[in-house]
Image 1 (cartoon, rainbow, N blue to C red):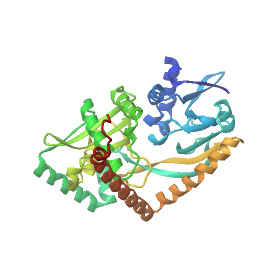
Image 2 (cartoon, helix red, strand yellow; image 1 turned 90 degrees about the horizontal axis):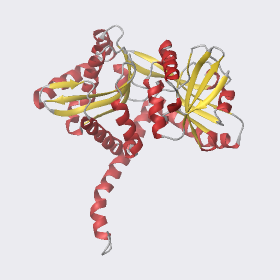
Image 3 (cartoon, rainbow, N blue to C red; image 1 turned 135 degrees about the vertical axis):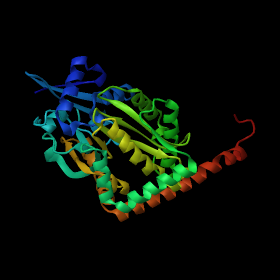
Image 4 (tube, rainbow, N blue to C red; image 1 turned 45 degrees about the horizontal axis):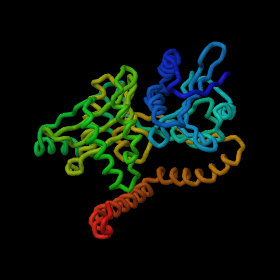
Length: 376
């Protein structure tokens, strides 16, 4: 095998076509985070993005997109922003993973949402996790029946709140694939507020992530697109979502809602209506990603599997990286596995978020009081 490392933007039309061909040939790769369009967009914004092009005498056999950070530390493309990564290749392609790292000038590659079971990385998987999905291959009504079987009480409650919101706030309608950038701005503002309220890092405080979202929103081809949905009560937006899709799969990314309407559970109402719109648009699946949200358990009608693990070559930087990352990864896995610990951690983060928000609200008046005379 010959391995050549390039920037994704350097791939020619034939190479990009081959990438799409390999992706479509394997159902486990049907995820927009594995699409060449996402890799090219990341490359425009981040200098550390690379792709290994793997070929033999028969032509290109695979692509390995990744990030190369200082000291040869390798990370999945998109890192904490994405819910799926891996090798885009024929299902039976098996490489020497350490030789691949050597060709990519990496000392270590740490993964946590890798497509499970890929031959190149299978022996390095330390854990495999389910990622719940809404599966519409048997039709929307069949999916709703599964949701009802999962939790009839939850579905009944949400449908009641849906009708109540419509009566009290105005007729509900869902806009599918909105092209309006102002609608996207509204959604991202809600999401930033959610991050801050719940004690999380506000991703949209980083300008490049906002720019990436804008770039993805502008994408609209049959194989890859950004999909913005918004639920309205009358003419007022109350809940929405922005995600990416392939021809058949939509991946959950940034859901949010206006907290003024929280009593109606607008986020879950939106998800039910978004699911129907996705099925009507010809999509087969909504991938909700692995994680500890309870609503995923009763909305799911199937699962995919993603793996956590680590490949490394002997080096000082790999050893330091292991000492820094392994305890964190183990702690995160323990918390995600135990609902009681997840809820406790969520409460702590929300408490931190309330304190942080309160302090931020007080800062402007304090700043005026403490500002020296003549300061600009």
